Figure 1 (spheres, helix red, strand yellow):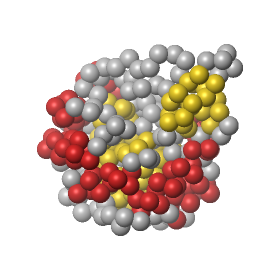
Figure 2 (tube, helix red, strand yellow):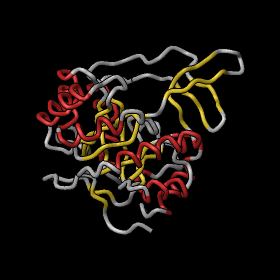
Figure 3 (cartoon, one colour):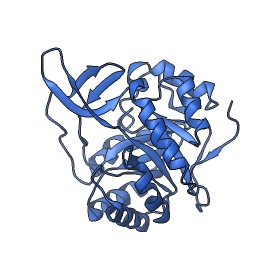
Figure 4 (tube, one colour):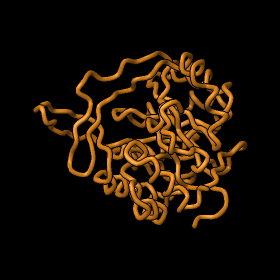
Length: 274
């Protein structure tokens, strides 16, 4: 049992305390409207809503999903309504989540990211931000984007990094002012559907967990300040506990929420998020 609050923004003037270590990852419940009736968000340490971008995006063309051994390959892109429309339609949900709400910002252009954060920073119920770094982002782009975001908000900002580049970019994120890093965005894989069509996209499911754990251990070994959050392939209590033993302060659930929302709640309760 993990007891007491977990601080995801150590040293930050506002902070980002969670009641427990198990969170819901971006994409698991959309903006909050896609929450399954069994999914009591108040049982979790926190939830990430979004992604948000300045302008609406249509997402990837079908087919978008292929089953694989140990999970699925999913290609959705950054489909979203645009920040202004999302706040108008779903902003009333966030103060009622029963736990801290973190907004994921996915713009890759600094001016657009700044507008997105500025719009969300004045919305009720947002406790912090998660900057989603694109896979192709380098050290300079990551640092600059984060610095621009921090000029727009006093709330803490986490940075979500790809598994492949987490150890390279995590020091840049912390040095540029991030409260912590999330390890990370899914690896890319491919699957063949029953109809013969191939889907190349992000890998979800328990089969993705070893890659998450490997990247997590790499980042932990750097000895950085700030918090460390694991995301990707966590489907069991054992996997969740392995993340915490490997040095994560918290972890985010993704595919488990879609497949077995009741099991996601049970995992959160078991690890002390009740």
